[in-house]
Image: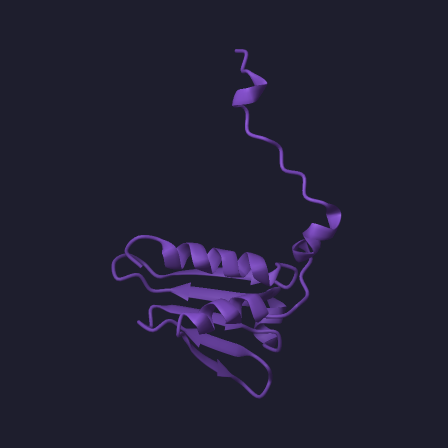
Length: 115
């Protein structure tokens, strides 16, 4: 099958300096900025862990840089969801996952119809 080059999507090649977000800076800023703007409840512990809950209480986000159990499992982010219908589920992200990626994941599930 031959496809005209005009019908193919253009390749996007960002400059290397535009990819700095691909490396984690170990800060929760992008996620906190998103969830604060949405009015989610935020609780920070003296140990620097942050616990965030959606207004309806069905989504929990934990940033756990000082949680020894999380470190043993190699995670720093934990997201727990209790749907109105169906089984609860958990998604965890490791230390080297950029916060921008976690914020993007959360934005996608928050924006999904029915949420």
